[in-house]
Length: 190
Image 1 (tube, rainbow, N blue to C red):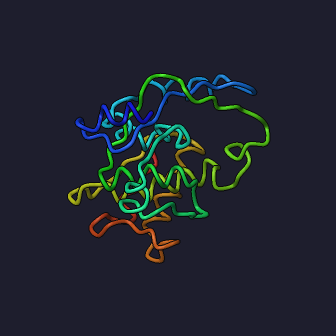
Image 2 (tube, helix red, strand yellow):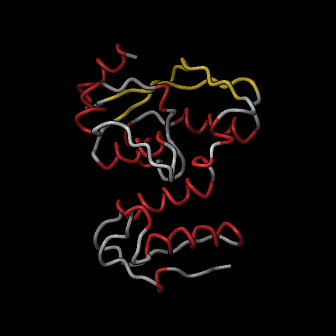
């Protein structure tokens, strides 16, 4: 990884990850997720897809000390979402260019006790809330309307997460930026 990072610094890479090989208790969905994640190689691809899901396993990466300590000012242990999710989102906000080499150098063992399956902050609800919070921070200032296209419980969950960020009391200090409308921003479409 160090050699890859050194060779890509001239392209603006500040950090590098590698592909993942999964083994153990592997489901079809997790296999598709890992294939998708492994397909994202260029920094722009990783950052453009960060709202889909975490674009690279944090543990597969080499992140120079100055990036982690000076640029990001360390990890944030926020109970509302996973640490690696928060780190990826903040790297994008701060313009940290992270690329990925295609070699699958990291083996990710799947088992029933791992935190991605059991820890509360890794739940779909927490990830959805985190995505909404970072999305509102990433929206250009001229965006005044947001449409969510989905159905059923998934749509309801997204709308609840969005309304939570739009509320004046904003949990954990996360608020929608000024100018983003309230009630008319959310509309159900079946």
